Image (tube, rainbow, N blue to C red; front, side):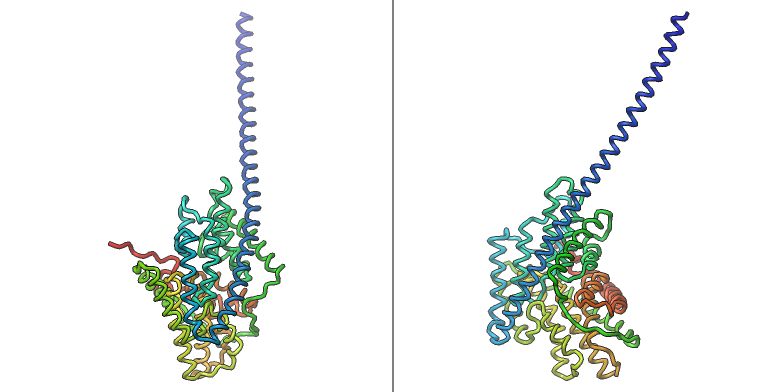
Length: 455
């Protein structure tokens, strides 16, 4: 009996021992798993932080180089063309031809699709932005603008920056889940360096590309933008437009709203021009025919209005200086209307015939001219006593906001361009008005429009 009792007690003891051993092992295992998970997250975050810093520097360096090269050679070639009109005929056909041969023989015969390439990459787990997209957009954007193509380098910078982020994502397995975040980090850094506005860089990456935020997005974009901004501060980069905004008057507010509505309508005209003309050019199979048709129309427009050459920032800077002394004459009105009518057309033709670029610079160009025209008409016929310079700046922001459906990006981008926040509140309201107007008339931008499949 004693032996049996002892055996039972030993059995109970053994069961308790095994149970406690199991509990201890399970707890230890759970602690180890939790520790490994935390360690993995920490290592991933460290790697993402390091690669974001590298992306920020590379994108900023690339953007600054492209900006200065474009400004330098555009000024030289535009001066040549302004003194000898024959260059207005030679430059566009030469530039588009060189771009075609580069694309055909060097860049895998692939056409640049602009920001739509980024959407295709971020929306698909398999599609990537290949490394050749970096030199492709860099050189094609440069050649398009310096030889008179009526667009800007902004979209070329955005896609090349996105390609840098995409290539970085492909180098580490732990980055595969963060492709969109690293692409957005590159874009934010490129925009920051180009427009001297870190907030605009992050907002553009959010409003146009990602459309959602996360902890990883905040860390990667924040670090990339911080590095890009530090880089341009070290280089002492100056604002693109150095203007002296002193004040704005409350009585001008209804006129600002009018400008917002007009900018929204004009942005739809620009968008529909791009969509329609690109659609027509895609039906032309022969690339030589595209180049010839495009060059003839661009050259004819430049002969009529040299202000349309390249980005057009040279013309905007001239208007900023003379805006206070502009007088409403028949010649002035015809010039302004001609430019506002032709700019969307030749921008579309530049892109459709092989040029590289987008609607950033054209939108700001149109907005500046529209703002000056509206202010001059108001002062002449309605004794509105508004400040033309303010209308030019607000018009730039309003057109950009309506064209890309990104009011907050436009707000901080334009304030960064002039390095002045005096007009912050009116720009904010007008950007919202212009975007809403554009969406009510036509819900798409050149980035979001999808052609209907053929039946």
